[in-house]
Image (cartoon, rainbow, N blue to C red; front, side, top):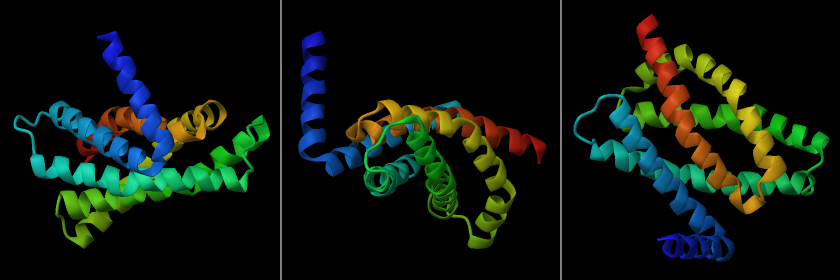
Length: 185
């Protein structure tokens, strides 16, 4: 079994090297699928909602994978690939002030409008109510992840690392936050 896993990992690393964007797109889609299956089970959904699952895979593949791929390349160009502590702090700050709020907003819009099919005014109201708490929570968690990502992860693994951590973020932190908000309201 170890030989099969080792060969699979070697093949994945080869694909990541030869076709980085495609591999990150597929990886983000697969992790989004696993994440949504877990989220549905955690929230008590008995029968898997395939439409929701496919729409989450679409979001991961069409948005998260490509966005992360190009965003990290941009950061490396802007900061000339440096990894000293001062530069990593700048990368993390830049990421937290730009892509973090943007990604949270895009996800909330997509989830409300596309996945849940809610009307614009209802989604807008929900975002006004919940976005500050979501973003505040993000700023208590993601800077540490960003530090590890920029300091220790090679460029080709940053999207994958972020997707894996995002799996836990969406299924633990945001799930608990949404549950708490619902209980408050």
